[in-house]
Length: 255
Ligand SMILES: Cc1cc2nc3c(=O)[nH]c(=O)nc-3n(C[C@H](O)[C@H](O)[C@H](O)COP(=O)(O)OP(=O)(O)OC[C@H]3O[C@@H](n4cnc5c(N)ncnc54)[C@H](O)[C@@H]3O)c2cc1C
Ligand code: FES
Image 1 (cartoon, rainbow, N blue to C red):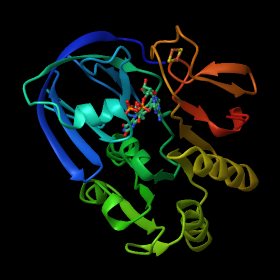
Image 2 (cartoon, rainbow, N blue to C red):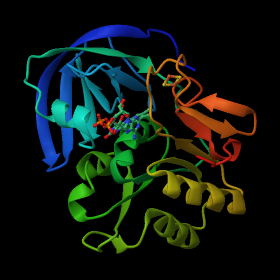
Image 3 (cartoon, rainbow, N blue to C red):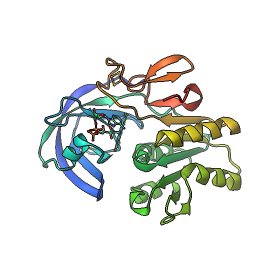
C-alpha cells in the first residue's frame, strides 16, 4: 500500500472533453498530486455530499487526467463542469499493481471503461519489457485511448458488435491469443465484474498469475465506512484501502 503523500488537494479543472457521447476526459491542474499505476482519487462533485472515485490515468507537467463514463447524477454533473472550477481531490489512494520481474510477460486485459486503468501500467511496464494489451468494448467508439496504448504496447481488440477487432468478449480474445502465442503471461485486468470473474477462473485453470483492479461502490475511499468490502480467502477486505488491486486467487467472487 502506497500511503505516502495522501492529501486533500485543491485541483483546478483545465479541460473537459467528450471522447464519446458518454465518456469524458478531464484534465485538472494538480501540481502536488502524484500517483502510481492503479491508484485513484476521490473527487468532489459540487452539491453532492459523497465524492466519486476515479483512477488517475495520466500526469503531464502539473496536470492530472481522469477519464470517466457518465453513469448517474455525479458523473453527469462533472461532464458539464466549467473549466477553472476548483475541486477537492483526495489522493493518491489505494494500492498499486505489483512490480514484476523482467522475465514475466505482461498481458493487460481491459473491458469497457476499465480500459483507462491500464494505460499508466502499460506505459510503466513498457520501459522494461514488451507489453500486450487486450481491449474489449461493446462497439468501436467505446474502444478509447488506442493511440496511447499503441505507442507503448502491442494492442489486440474485440467488440461485441464486430465493428473493431474480433467479434467476441475480451476473455475469449485472450484465450485465442494465448493458444497462438504459447506464452504464460502475468495478467493485469480491469473491467466489469463478470469479465474479471471469468478471467480469474481461466487464470486458475491455466496456472497464471492474475491481478485484478476492482470497482465497488465507495463512500469514504479511506477505509472508514466499510461500504466497499469484498470477501477474500483472508476474510473481508476493503477495496479502497486493501485494494483496489487484488491477486484474483485471493477473491471469493461472491459480490
Ligand atoms: C477505485 C475506483 C476507481 C474508479 N475509476 C473509474 C474511472 O477511472 N472511470 C470511470 O468511469 N469510473 C470509475 N469508477 C466508477 C465511478 O466511480 C462511478 O461510475 C461513479 O462514482 C458513479 O457516480 P455517479 O454519481 O454518476 O453515479 P450514481 O449511481 O448516481 O452514484 C451514487 C453513488 O454510488 C457510487 N457509485 C456508483 N457506481 C459506482 C461504481 N461503479 N464504483 C464506485 N462507486 C460507485 C457513487 O460514487 C455515488 O456515491 C471507479 C470506481 C472505483 C471504486
Ligand atoms: S469506501 Fe469507505 S471503507 Fe471503502
